[in-house]
Length: 187
Image (cartoon, rainbow, N blue to C red; front, side, top):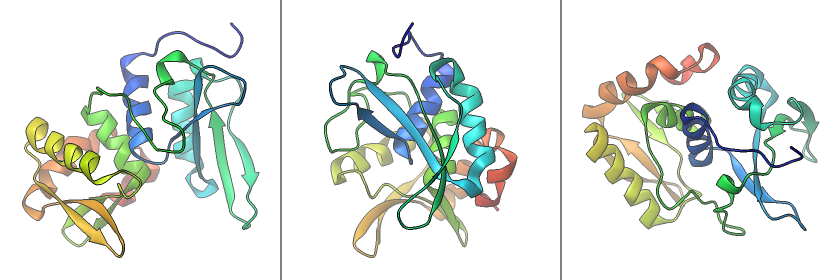
């Protein structure tokens, strides 16, 4: 089988989409044709990385490993094998497939990766995406789940803010998918 693998399950696709909306990163190794997905979080989130690994391990060659960065940060990460289904990557720009499903599991993974709570509402850190894509995400959350959002300036960048009147609906949408070590983000 080498480094390339077949199709993803629906659960794996949801986790991949949520990861790409969050901290996940696609990469094409020089000289290779297909992209791979890197899952990389702080070692403090080891349980979360291990959960992702268990869900994606049919697409992974080696289990997660600890890595020290130049700045002294200790990370915990793994990579999927290369896969043609991941090869929608646009060099140097965070990207997702042209059409993707934003189901509750994908939203939950996105929140576990890059979400936070502030007072009576939630934020999804989408600063790495361009303005029009962020508008598309706001529209998807509203149209699919009735969750009212706005784009909110966070210092220099813009992120998604769940409006206070939709905070409970948002929490209800994702809470069954949030793993125990990440529940603190909802409280």
